[in-house]
Amino acid sequence: MDQPRTARTYLLVLLFISLRGCGNLLLAWGTKRLPTVLGVHPAAYLQSIFDPAVAAGIAMLIFSLFTRMALLSIADLSFVLPVTAVGYVLAAVLGKFFLHEEVTALRWLAAFLIFAGVAVVGSTPQNTTKEALAK
Amino acid sequence: MKWLLVAITVVATALSDLLQSYELKRAGEQSVSARGIARLAATVARRRYLILSIVCLAFSFFAFMALVQSQPLSFAVPASAASFILETIAAKLVLREQVGPRRAAGTLLVLGGIILLAR
Image 1 (tube, each protein chain N blue to C red):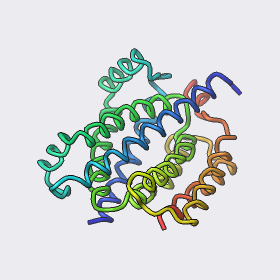
Image 2 (image 1 turned 180 degrees about the vertical axis):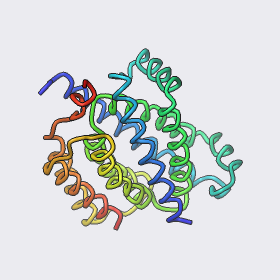
Image 3 (image 1 turned 60 degrees about the vertical axis):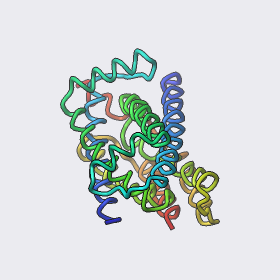
């Protein structure tokens, strides 16, 4: 296995998960404070961007988008999807500590399943289309 | 309204990911250094599939934003993960990725975890 590339892949995964987790948290916190309900009104979305928490959340999500693009340039989509799912566990943990959402025993079991799945997928080759593209 | 927002998020996310994965493999290895991001932004601006993927992502983003405002983050995030199945099947059929038994089993474990997380 190509060690530097594997290390680079997991570094990008870590960066992506952190940025997305914090970005989503800021977005959720910011939008919940807004006086208007978001839905089908474009003006409400534009207005929401001026909220500092929403703006910071959007900036972090944009950077996370670039990080994920870099990840997709070197790894399979079917590899990236499950491996970055650790972010769902992070979302639940951040939701518990910052938004006071409930995290039950069932959710901790869910976290275990996600980590186990990530470990299994992580043991497969990260890019299986290189040969196909080279042809 | 809640499920309509979930559906828009899921379909738009799947389309965006497929387009990005296909086009970025063709564009070559990218990085997230300051120069790397500038190069990546230029690559996005030049390739129409990547531009289309950003449009899909915008639909997905605004639907998700409306979802997190009205629902707990611990519902909105796992619910939008339904794109997982759709994307893994498309990765095998459209992108010709090798989704073997080990990767499929790991993906199902993760999906099971995400569904449990939403309960």
